[in-house]
Length: 276
Image (cartoon, rainbow, N blue to C red; front, side):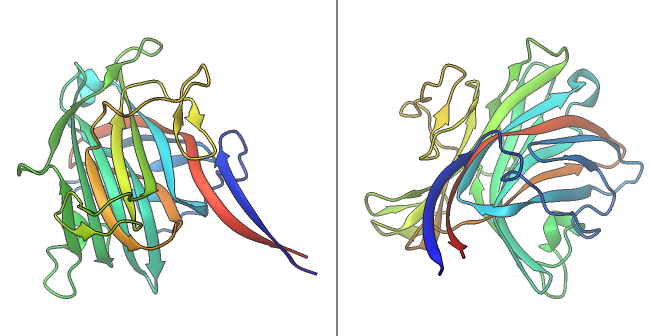
C-alpha cells in the first residue's frame, strides 16, 4: 500500500537533502566550482579573454534558499567575476530556463554589484550572456534588477571578522503566495493567490531557515524583513507552490582570478513522498 506523506521541511544540517547532482561537463566545462552538499568553493584563474561560466545543481527540488556568499582576497580580486544563486531551474532536452541573482565585489571596502534576471531557451551557458546574442536560436533575458539601467545595481556586503580580506553577503530567494494583485520588478502583472519569488541581499547573519522558509539567526530568532526591501520580485504564473532545482553559479572574467565560497544556510522544501 502506498501512503502519500506531505512534508514541509527546511534542510539545515542533513547533507542528504542538500545533496547535489553530479555536474555535467556542459554545466561547468572548466571545472571552476568544487565541493559538495552544503559547501562549494571557487579558486579559478581565467587565462583566456572570454568569461568562463559554470554552475552546480541540487539533486532535489526546492521553493527557495539562503546562500552565504564569501568573496575572498578581495583586495587583489575585486571585480573579478560573479558568484550567485540560480533558482527555479529546469532543463528539458538540453534547453535550460532559470532565474539568477549574481553578485560581484566592486572594491575591498564592501561595495557590491548585483543583478537579477531570468533566462529562457539557454542552449549554451558559455555563450555571451548565456546566449542572448546568438544569431540562431538565441536565449531570452528578462531583467528584474537593476531597474535604473546598467548591468549592475549597487549593494553592500560586510567585511568578515573571522577571515581577513573577505566580504560576505547572503542571497535569499523565496517563493511566496501573493496576497494581492501586483506587478513584479519587470512590470509583469500577477493575481492575488499566484506565487511570486522575492529576492533579497541580506547582511544579517543567517543560520538557517525555519519550516516556513523564513530566515533564522544564530539565536534561533526570526530575521525580520519588514524594513528590508527586496532587490527583485518575480511573477511565476504558478497557482500552487512549485519546486524546481537550485544551483550555485559563477562566472570569471577574462584574465581574472575569483576566489570564494558558497554555503547553503537553508532551503525551503515541500514535497510529496510516496512510500510502499
